[in-house]
Amino acid sequence: MTTTQQLQKLKNDKISSQILLFDLDGTLIDTDEANFLAYTEAVKQVKNIDLDLLYQSNERFTREKLSLIIPNLTAKEVKRIIEIKTNVFYKYLQNTKLNIAVLEIIKQFSKTNKIILATSSHKLKADLLLKHHSLSDIFYEKYYKENYASVENNKYKYILDDLNAQPNDVVVFEDTKDEITKAMLLNIPSINIINFKIKGERSYE
Image 1 (cartoon, rainbow, N blue to C red):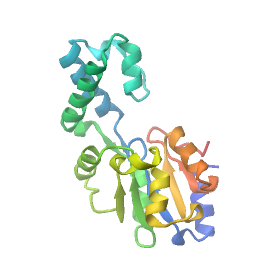
Image 2 (tube, one colour):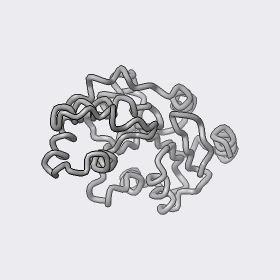
Image 3 (cartoon, rainbow, N blue to C red):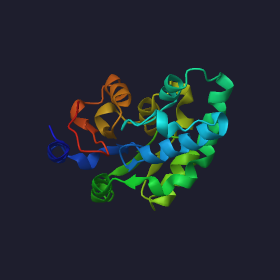
Image 4 (cartoon, one colour):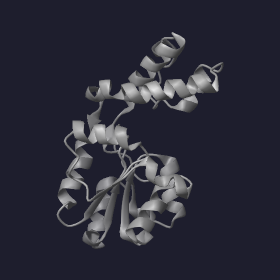
């Protein structure tokens, strides 16, 4: 089932009564290039290695990939790279791209539904992205990585509890399989989970 078909079915099931939860990175905003550029600068500072020569995949660059590509990194070096990457991310905001299709969905339902930011990003980074793309004021509520430490990093469990909402009450827009799995484990119906990737629309998997 495509995203459009899912939305149409949800409309038929009175979507106006539901809370819409939007992921940020990879769903609302493509941050992969900016993320990689920030990592590249950090690795250059810490190890004097050109990360761009070692990694050319189209997949999102992560801490796990960093350790695979440079296996001799110490824990202290990894920590320092992450710190620098976080601190220099703002330089590459112009390399992020807004997903217009997702934004249109938000605009369409913002007058009838509660629009919630459900991001696994830290507050500082998420707020930088929202401000850069003029999205700071479109959400009824915002939830960040800092909120989820007490619930085994399951953002959807935290948000449902905080909003006093039931699994049937929410529609999730997400691009990460792990996060989709966490949503499903909470008994959020599959029709209410929309896998909406920045780099090409995909149906729910």
